[in-house]
Image (cartoon, rainbow, N blue to C red; front, side, top):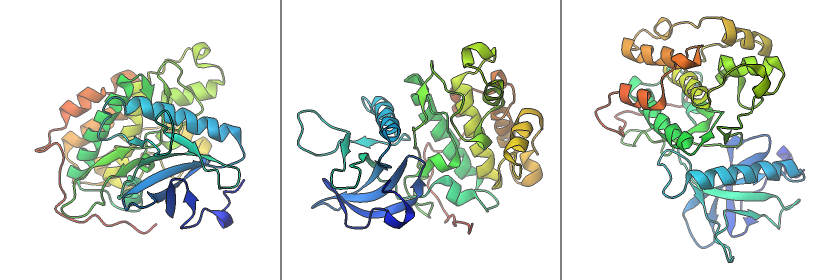
Length: 321
């Protein structure tokens, strides 16, 4: 593999027709790394997701994600779902994916719109939480994005604060413009997998399937894909408002038990200025019984904001981690 810490792709490296500007430290995953780049002769930035070379499963995963993003971006896409770009190389057909032929292993890559803000996790981890209007704006916009995703019969399955990135930095005067990224474990709502996603954001019914250690169709446990993503958004909402996860400080086994059986600390116990209406929505999204969680449309209808997209009247500092 060419993707060790010592041999990350350097600034100025050509990944035709792009030139690498820098690595995105928040964009490292098990199968790929995200870089900021620009097209030769142009100044506009793009994000390149480059597979980690030498393993065919990495290519297959990247290709599956491209298929999902093409479907979600067609015909006009959604403003809060990451946009995939056509790579401008000579070809009979528009190509969203190509090989970096001058890199060791010739890894596959695709291009996305560049987001100048940070992942939400960078703003909330180690903080006391975001202003309520910011968190509500993120929730209503990502709920709208997820409604679009599920209308296309796709489940994201890994909704978390790391996978919600701000299009602009959270600074005074900027729009609060969150974007849902990373569809690497997304799946058809008819073929939902049990072993994908992040444990802390995984709802009880999926954990029960995993513990059953049998195929979903034989477990007898009903998993409704949209309610899985509602729960992930609910955990993200809780973290945005309190700076912590509903169940934190556990080992993996302890965390599984807590999600399945324990009651979480009420948000207002952690932050007294959370309004009762906001707490009520948050707790509903985190119901252990998936049938009691709201739909995306109900979440959108419940949140009452003066404007669809808010602009910040303050700077949101990035906590030290």
